[in-house]
Length: 119
Image 1 (cartoon, rainbow, N blue to C red):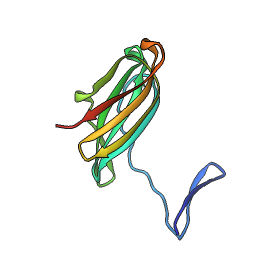
Image 2: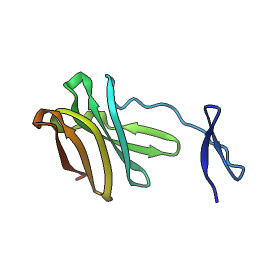
Image 3: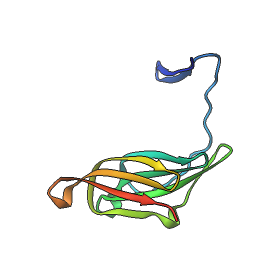
């Protein structure tokens, strides 16, 4: 069985695997909080976050993986909550649909869910 753990602040993998990282990709060029990511398929993911430079609106961006390179489709970011959003979580339902859940500060702190989908 393989596993990953943190030892002295470093990632360590069992069974002789070595972990490496690719280059960084900026998906939001402002202050970003409550970051959560989910896979859509083997080359796509959705990252959801509170965009503090946009009134903490709940925002989503598609990420694409090619080999070890991540590309963020920032030109097509989507606001899924036009109000302050906290404690964001997102999960994949299938290859074209995900559900984001969050605390909607602008709506009496209600727990709220929204579908994010690809076309």
